[in-house]
Length: 284
Ligand SMILES: *[C@@H]1O[C@H](CO)[C@@H](O)[C@H](O)[C@H]1NC(C)=O
Ligand SMILES: *[C@@H]1O[C@H](CO)[C@@H](O)[C@H](O)[C@H]1NC(C)=O
Ligand SMILES: *[C@@H]1O[C@H](CO)[C@@H](O)[C@H](O)[C@H]1NC(C)=O
Image (cartoon, rainbow, N blue to C red; front, side, top):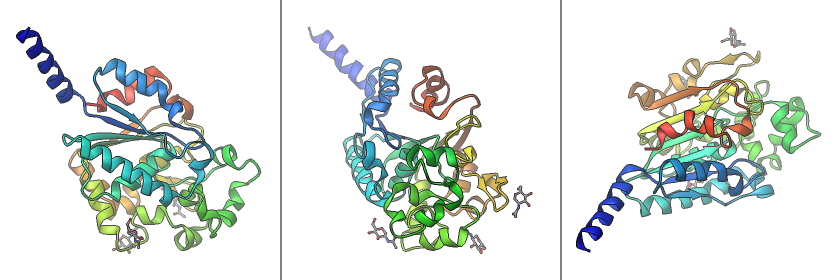
């Protein structure tokens, strides 16, 4: 009797030591249910893992203002972090990855150990295939007229729409991406960087056959210049100036860049083979 009890205690202890809790944030125009395959797979391969599948801002509400969403996600992550003092893992998919990053950057005392950005437009988005998922009649070339306005900034997409031909307007009107990327300095810039540097591991996942994130390299902080050539992240000011700590993380071997071909945007979180290769190794 006593031995059995001790054994159970032991197993619980080992279980809680082995796998950190995972917080998952879904993408645009979907909800927690879209992440079910990933949740079940983690629970199966890493038994005992506590997985929080965030159900905030599903469906159309995922288009609400980026900062408004970040405020709630921030509280959500903070609350879960306080329940698990050993540290937590946050995984954000697509738009969920850029919102999660902003939430982490806005929590200077977070205990997120690992942040996994799963095919997220971290350097912004500029392209028709993504745009037409949400605004079927809008052309990428003229979308700036909507997005770089008061009304456009009420949408999450407006917050990270990054038109390489309209950089002055982007800097002037975008209330989200230039701030969290410390391109536009504010009283929060220092803590935005601290929030990033506090991570033990930053995993950026993306690939050339994504088909939605444009350019796909935005998932690694690389981006278009004015001629629509993709400038690799290590040649961009955000890295060279260490604006948000990417350089610090890389030099400390805490930044992991994963490039995986032949994965469509809708497969990153739903194809078990892909999950095994790009996500599971970072959930410890
Ligand atoms: C990077 O640093 C240079 C020189 O200090 C500065 O002019 C530029 O605005 C900085 N860029 C960013 C994106 O922080
Ligand atoms: C800084 O962050 C606080 C808390 O999230 C926010 O209320 C404030 O508006 C931010 N300030 C700037 C200049 O963005
Ligand atoms: C754009 O980037 C490419 C590749 O880095 C470079 O060759 C080209 O000169 C850049 N163009 C401009 C306008 O910066």
